[in-house]
Figure 1 (cartoon, rainbow, N blue to C red):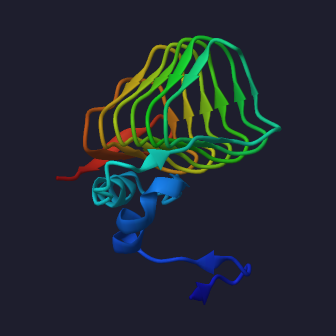
Figure 2: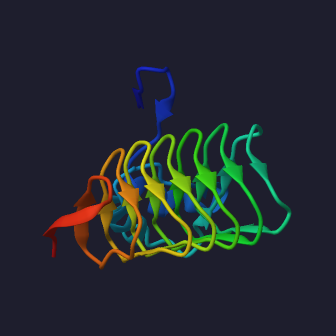
Figure 3: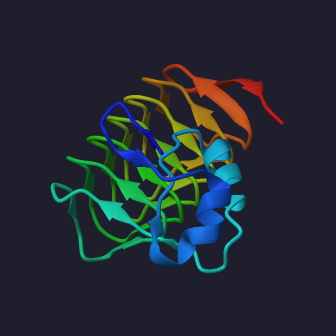
Length: 172
């Protein structure tokens, strides 16, 4: 058995997990959305249960939905009528405005600010301190660079940077 630098035991890899899944709740904390999806898709045991981790310092309305496998880190604020999909990560100090939707596998790095009525497509990745204004949609599998400000809809599968955020390349 291997131990991490923090002293936690590593019980095994995906094959081990698939064999021993009945007694565990699992979350996948890989920041990259497509890598996280690949790992989760490789878990084949039908007895796997995906947990949800919400730090006790998180402030959120009772009208927030958080689906399985998601991780919400400390000092995050989620207002009202927000839906957080499966296997999302909201890192330290993120802010989510009313009526927003974060689709499955979205990743928000520390300090991200999402205004109201925003839709983040499946697999969206928002870098450190990125911001999205009201009523904007970020396309599926789109990356928004650190410090960028999204002021208009972004297409799917692009990398957008700057203020205002503009696509600089498209990915397959």
